[in-house]
Length: 185
Length: 454
Image 1 (tube, chains in turn orange, green):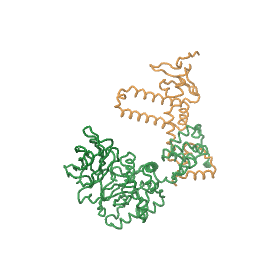
Image 2 (cartoon, helix red, strand yellow):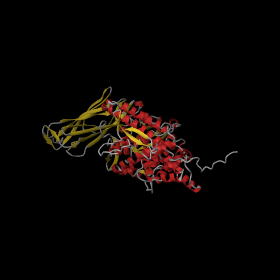
Image 3 (cartoon, chains in turn red, purple):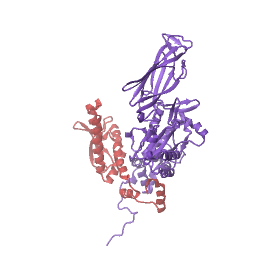
Image 4 (tube, chains in turn red, cyan):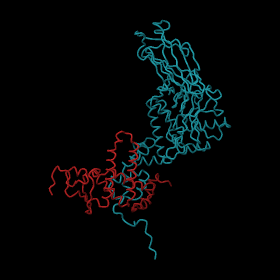
């Protein structure tokens, strides 16, 4: 297991002309993602730049089904970034409509991704995005949870998020008074 | 056999990684994206979430985003212990209005007050504390109709200026301190003050009593009036439009003061009425130096003659500078439909900023002796006059002195027009000319009924 210093990530292999990295989920499954996609994670970027791990990068905090979604997100966004970089009309500045449409499509894709998740999967993805430091994914997932709260009463929030009401009767009264401004009675 | 019902405090299944187990900073991110009202609902859901929502940095952000509040102060600028307390106090006081509008009106008054305290502190001192919701309700009951929401919010923050009282001396003292301001030419003096709520009700009732047939059922209120010569601004509470009365106001004749397309009194998120738009535009002009204060003897006032291009033109000849601009005068007897014409007043400013030079020779002074004045409209020249002096004077100009300023007026038939001309000067003095007379141009300046009338 001789990892040579200075050699950028022995875990990085070439696949169809693209450098790949291998990731290992908490439940032992192996995943591959392009290096370009991995760059979206500040954590992975540091690990790769730091000189490489032979048998892949272990991620004991991220389960397989979550890691799969993470990779989907990163690959999609890395491709979109590459496309807009290589777009000749982007340089000419005449394609502000194109770039606006492209980013709108990407946003739609992000929304579709988070909308398709169960609540458990959504929270796992938030935790993973936070741990791996993927700002865009953290933003999209947090926004989804935030949207789920809008226009809801405390009771509705407890139901949606499976929260135990551990207030005493007096505390509940106190809270109602403190936040009376928020509720149109 | 039916199962006993679950008590409301028992969850049916425990989530493995739920909202409550999110790490602090991540939970803060979620809550700040959700907003203040959802945060309140969260706080009431469980003790863990109550603790998370108590984080004052969240409320600091909500105060900034929702209210434009950057310090924990109450609506009267008194300090509060936390941003969370501040948000609560503000919502209790202003929660009946859409927050984006609250933020906008707050910003307006704060910016205007800042400008006034620096540039016109005498007027700043005439501003009164805002009225309460119940005072607004009383006014609405008294008038018999509802007031537009933006107008009410404006008055919640500030009850405009001191009223014109029974005491003549008090009135004289504040007479030129109108925050809208005005102009003075010949015997026509105008200075517009924004009326406090009590005065609005009083003057509106007076108007309806005197001219009942014209105004009954129209839901117009008098929001601003002029000290000196009458000039009346009326807000239409049905559609949010703002108008200024002509001298034929008793017959219902008025000009719109704000472009109609901008008026949206019933928009859900950001209703805007003519009064708010008019005041904001006026503030913008003050902030950008398009209009400035001047002195009338020892009293400061806001002068409505434009000071900046394109309405104010400037020309320099032989070191003599002439700046000129005009203002539309809707309330002048010369303005109005029956006559089919409009009255304008213009202000001419003469000065020698550095030196008066003619043919390589510097002169220490020069004196005006005649004018050539041309007034034109789209259809051609309306008037072409040669005259002696200006308003009966023959000003002497010296380098570095303050501008010699004079005002006059001219009627114009409907449609935009212009004024141009020249003055004849002699170097030195008329009594002792030091050289040959020379012409000084007046760059043409526009005469037109503006989009915003003040």
